Length: 235
Image 1: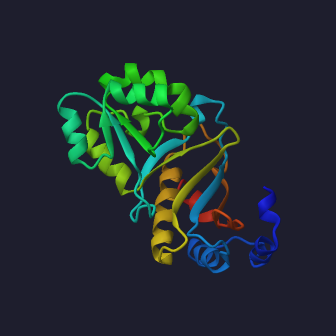
Image 2: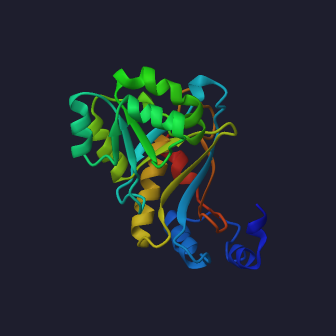
Image 3: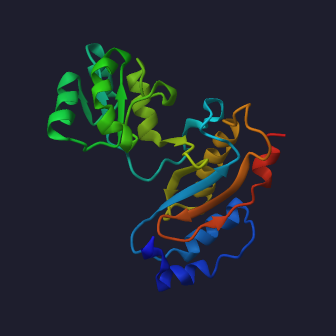
């Protein structure tokens, strides 16, 4: 990450002490040391004591953040029949059936941020795995994006539903809002996400579950969070 070694980044990093911060302190510091000239996303990064190679140690789920993410996601719904109207009424940006699958396949169309599909359409949507999968857009029953309740799914995505999933290295990265948010809203969003990840602890995970956690703006340095309260909850 070459861009992160610039003078402004180093000046910001110099203000981060090598100690664990409470969430309130950390959010205040992230907002104080921001230097980018756009409204950065604030992200939480957690390293977990799990081995994601084992299916029983997979950590994934979704959480609706109380204050959203500061931008409304563009939602595509792939469904049929009566559900087309339901999706439109719920505020989906794009609604269709096989025509949408073809548009993505043939035209490489990707002007959306989330995809919801009804189960009857998954045989068609399955063709898009190679396109949507790597972008994290593939609908999945586990995250509530393959469902007959398409209206509810659209509303949740629009409300700021965040998906979290542990990567190969045992880490989770997820957005919790914008740096311009009032501090207390960022704290509530981050706390809601952290609690959801703590609750998702697999029974097979042994030892200390949250190994480390940081919060940062997309261009700024990470501020280390105190993981003690995150691990106590599981005791």
